[in-house]
View 1 (tube, rainbow, N blue to C red):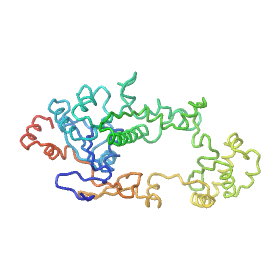
View 2 (cartoon, rainbow, N blue to C red; view 1 turned 90 degrees about the horizontal axis):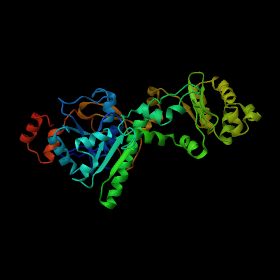
View 3 (cartoon, helix red, strand yellow; view 1 turned 45 degrees about the horizontal axis):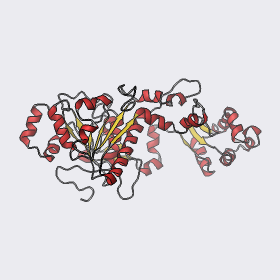
Length: 404
């Protein structure tokens, strides 16, 4: 079926790339919805499953359904209600799972077992299922049953100890990076498992956690300890190893300059009109620049404060020195390169024009786009259940009994 053409009652796909896959979405809050958004945005048919209206307690961290946070997390999906605390609800879920490719959940590890919808239970009815679980600390181990929360993972994962100004004390990152990365890594694991299934014919259990994701994202900072025995410390806006790299004040704002390596440092000093710095023995080598970094940064800022951010960004870029302005969010979206990239995607479905944060990946033949706003609670329940063979009388009875 051509992209963009939708049969009556069928899902509208955001891309043809993953349109052959069906995903059952049991997730809440952020890490799970982030994972599922990756699949929905690339065209998978996603069915978001929530409790019936009378039993729904709301998403504790997602904000109001009409709010920007919820809207941005749940576009490109369909939705149904299903009471998984009811035996009939579990039976219906297993019926849906028979024809699904992927299930994503971020319950605490013990919850899915108690409900009877854990990986083993679902694999018994569909051995091809790829079942993804996202947790705070892992599916087993001493912390498995602890509730997970992004800032807890930032602290336990080491990030807060290296964020902020030296001596400032622990500082959280301004986005829920552990949640976001755990979700993105889970989506990557799902895609790997789907690729492997093409060879083996079998599904498998994909697991990710906020703690693991946060540790992985430490990257070279973690390797400094594992391989060299160094415990990284806070470096503020200064890069811990590439010097001079940091934030410098201009006459009308702030900018970043990244002048690591001797050649780039020479180009930087010349573009700033500070050849005198190149003659100073304190700044001759990377090691000596590191030793005298605070004095060097002060010298650079004496110069950058003499003119505007735009002036220095243009001058340094012309000289081949990596640099850029430090934007507020509104300024960032107004930048011509950001607008050219089109990452703010508009969706005008249902008579509403809403801008969403689009995917940061471009595919030449099967691009991603936002084709539908987040669904209302249970918006597609009837048509989804009709799709697995239930008649209207049965659906009405299930609704009357708060199974759906």
